[in-house]
Image (cartoon, rainbow, N blue to C red; front, side, top):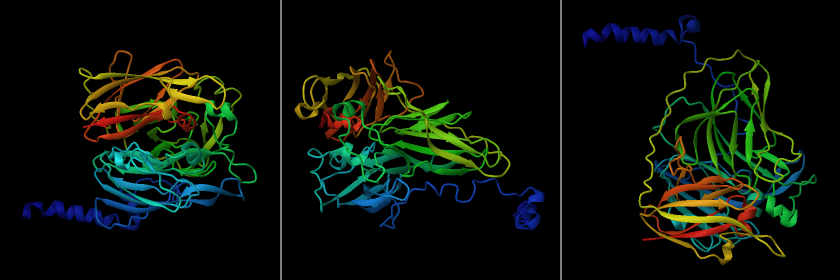
Length: 478
């Protein structure tokens, strides 16, 4: 219409002026950005999507032994997905169908567990319950829908302490197109460790005997996306969004950066109710964290991201120094002014405990000669009867720790809400699938079983503990 012509013309002229060399002088300068190749030292290999249609992600994935470099200049015959540590990054959107054609070229049987994904029990990778083990030379097709946004991950559930410890794990990022924009430049960080000798050989998975099992074996080399102490580039003042998963079989990751704070906006099940700030970021084995960080410092300087020993029980921090996990190098440019942080809020309805059934579990150790045996309620996994519940039931679980070490407790297939001592949801609320159970303490959570019957595992995610018997099964019936 004629009345709109002057406004349209002015918008056209303004847009055209931004194409001229003097654009910066008239206020059309490009917004500041991260340095070119800022994440190249840690970027994960993307999985190749075989399906070109929207809403379906289809990939081939092979478990095999392959040489990787952990000790500089030395090859290590690691256990890998598609030849690298970590495995390729799978990326989907909430509601997508994910199809993974898996082949096992390892010298041992294996499965894949899709940690945190609310899928059907037949796709959960629990050997003997959801599927048979996939033998060497065998294959299995995982086919499921990812209903929730968040960072999830995949790893084996056969001899899991050994197989994951040798390098078998990878990340699955499920995006939410409706979340706030401009949260920060995104980086998926898979934190882990691996035990490698100076000659490049893998360490002994039974090192330390019963004491090694009791403590939980940690690797000799800290890894960030498979690299030892890599460097991320950054522009001072610009936010980065770190999507973090702790894929280590035993090690707690507690990270700190001098004079910086982390803004945690999410965890296992996507965004939290509201952000929280902390001086250090603690991620227990199996947990995830979605955090924002705005690096600050002199142009050209380097920030050290330190692994800080976490006191998870007797001897856990004794004579253990901090270790530099990775570094953030600041570009030789003035500090930038980032856009204000958009509002981050999520409405999470509290589960109703009114009719909830009570489940009491104790994490235990059996005394006696021979190999160390752990269990739940005094019974190791190979002797335990499954818990039984029905679709639609709500339960409040109390998990008591009777041992002198913390335990990260993981429930397959379902999210839960952690409760405080008064039985109220811990605030800010979030959906969890893995929670730490402290020394001489207990953790309570409430869970509701939606319409996905089947056999579901629960266990300590210090994988040496799970293999020693600290694991059980939940049978959800119709």
